[in-house]
Image (cartoon, rainbow, N blue to C red):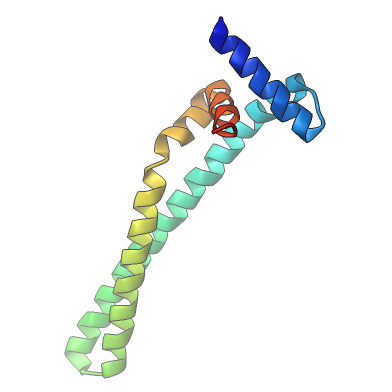
Length: 121
């Protein structure tokens, strides 16, 4: 009972800061949950595609460098390897928040509650 009162108070305070009602704020947050989750998921998938293509092209450039011995190809290959590494680190950072994607898609009320409570930390 006390937790419910804290949540209601938190939503009311946040709604007052935004100049709206708590009910309207809650409805907007629940509707925003799947949208936000799909944006995060699509960003993750685009990052994975970049990893695939940068790794593939890096290997292709390195094999061509071994065959033709052109120094520019080695530089391009190393650059693409570094980009692949950077995209991999970004992808791992995005995976850290994967539970938030799932809660936004399958349980938007929980996602909204998390966002409300995180605004008061």
